[in-house]
Length: 258
Image 1 (cartoon, helix red, strand yellow):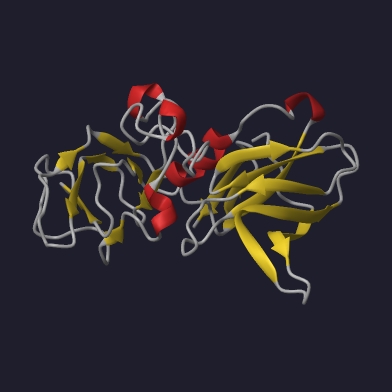
Image 2: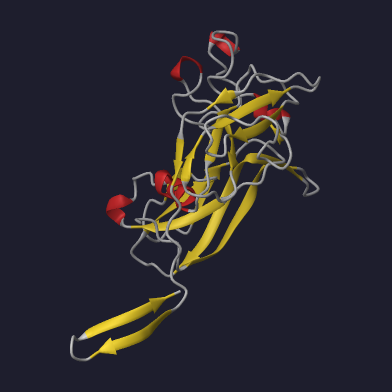
């Protein structure tokens, strides 16, 4: 793995104020944060990832802070990670390696577009077939319904409105959400905002998942099903290795692994 996380400590994120009053009070800006850290690596560059997505890289090996863009929701927790990388790999996006750690744990990540056709106040339920081939819509996998929009800021996003209805005739060009989601997956191939759900650890097998959306009035959509998803958890590491026997004549050592 090209990302190095050991040797990096005291990672801190500070909200950047949009303005300061004369009495010292300030107006917060939830979209930007100053990230600082300490490191034992003098010759490495540093990449910052926000919720598993590449947010930026330092300009040299001495830099220990960076301003990054944050999700607009005021209620959703944000995961910020700092990694050291070799200088020749500084501009490489390793988001897929972070995602792969979920697959190795036997978990499944379902990413959904938060489009304009999903009403404010809607919730999502996740279902699966338990490897049987037919989705069981009686028992959702998630413990409680997933809010599609936790805050009003989540509703907007570049490429998520109807074409030509925003400022200056552009497609939601003035809305929050630019650069927040999966590139090319929004309307007209533009960027769009997403929300995600990660399953608990699952056994090895082939599964199908489905999502249903329910609005505030209780109206439920039809299930939107995925294709087949193969889950192959990483092998459980050995907790103890001991010598069972040693045959001097055959020069053969027998190990016991548990």
